[in-house]
Length: 531
Image (tube, rainbow, N blue to C red; front, side, top):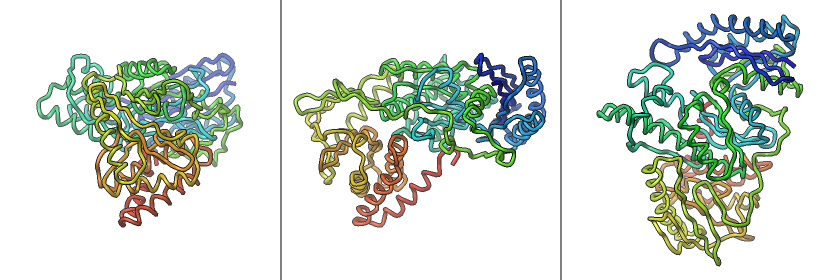
C-alpha cells in the first residue's frame, strides 16, 4: 500500500508518500519562517495556500513513478484552523480525483506513532515535546491516555516566548541550544505536579533574568537545564506509574541534543529502552501522517468527505485507536528485591523501609542537589504532620538529609494500583479533603503513592508536597490522582466518581471549600492544551 500524506497544522507545508511494503517514506516540505516574532496565523495560512499545491504535486510525481497512490491521509487537527483548512481541502480534492479512501489523522498521535513505528516498541510511554504541546501519552483500553501534560504553554512556545523577548527570530529553540553551550547555571523555577508541569513561571523568570543583566548565555543554559529536566522527570514518573520499560520521544523540540541526552541517561539508569526517531520525522512533517494513515487504512479506519471536517482542538485522547492491538502501557511490576520508583530506591528491611533518593545524572548537579535535599526534608515533615491530622501514614524513624535517605515504617500489603476499589478511592478522597482543610497538598497522590492493607489506606511519598490553602493547588491534587486512574485502570469512571464523592463528603464536614475545589478541578481538566 502507498499512502500520500498531507501535513498543514501550523508552520510546515508538507506532503509525503509511504510505502508499506518497503517501509520507505518520501517527504517534501516547505517551512514557513516569519521575518520577526512568532507564527502569524494569517501569514502561515497564506504560506500553506502557496506551498501545499507545490509539495503535493512533488509527492504525486514521486508516487506515480513508484506505483501510484492507494490512500490519501491528512492532518485533521489539532492546529491553526486556517492552515488545517488548506491541507484538508487539498487532501479531499486529491482523494476525490483519484477515487481512493481518505483518512483523517490526529497530528499529535502521528508524532508518537512514528516513534513507536521506527522503534518497534509494543506499548511505550510517549513524550511529545513540540512547539504548542508537551504531554505524556500511553495506550490503554483502546485509546492513548494523557498521563501528564503542560498546564499552560507548550515547551517550544515557552522557549519562543523567551527568544522573542530578547529579539531573536522564530524558531527560538536552535538559538537557545547554541547559546547554551557557553552558559553557566543560574536558578530558575522548577514546577512539577505529579506528571503535570507548568512552563509559564520559568519563562517569566528567564525574561526577568535577562532584563536584570544576567548573560543571555547563562539564561539559555539554565532554561534548557530546567525545562528538559522537568520533562525527563515526568517521563520517569510515567514509566514508574505504568511499569513500562519503553520510552519514545516525539515532536520538534525532540531534535534538541540536550533533551535527548537527558532522556537517554534517565532510561539507561533505570534499565528502560529509549528511542528518538530521526530528525526529519520529529519536526512537523507529512511522513508521520502517511505512516499513521497507512495503519489506519489497513484497519478500515477511513472517513467520508462529510466526516472530514478539521478540528483545531482535536485532543489525542479523543482518538479511538483501531489499528493498535498491543498490550496496555500499564504493566505489572516486580515485587521482589529493591523497588525503584521515579526518584528513589526503596528497600524493605525487617519491617522498615529505607528510601534513598538517588542522584540523577541527567540533571545539573546544583539543581539535583537542591531537589533531593528539599524533597527529603518535605517528605519527612509532611508525612509526620499528615499523621497528626488523622490520615494514616508511615512513622518516620530517621532522616539523613546529606544522603537524602529516609527510614520509615513499612505499611500496607500492596500499592493502591493493585487493589483499586470504589470504597478505597472514596476513602482516599476523604483523606485528601482532610489534608486540604489544614493547608497541606500531597503533590503526587497517584495510585502508586497509596498503600493498602485489608482495612486501611496509607498515604506515602510526600516529596512533591507543600503547604497551600488555595483551591487551585487542592484541585491539582485531585487532578493528579484522577489522571493516574484514567491512564492505567480498567473502567476508571466509577473509581473517579467515588473519589470525588468521598472528597465532597469529608470537605463538606469542615467547610464550604469543596464546592470551589471541585469547580476548580473542572477548570483544570479543561486547561489541557487542546481541551
